[in-house]
Length: 62
Figure: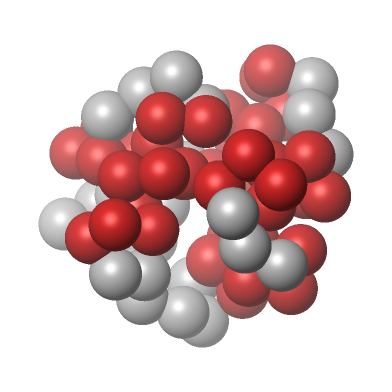
C-alpha cells in the first residue's frame, strides 16, 4: 500500500526509531510500512497518523 510515511517523518525530523516508539511498534514495522510491504491494521494506521500529525486518509493512498 502506498503511503506518505517516509516523507512526513522526514518533514517532522523524526527517525524511524522515534516513530516506532510513538506508534508502539518495532522499527522494522516502520521500515516495512514505508516500503509498502506491510498493510497495517486500522489501529496501527491511526497510531502512525497521530504520531505524524495527520490523518489516516492523508497518510495512506487508499
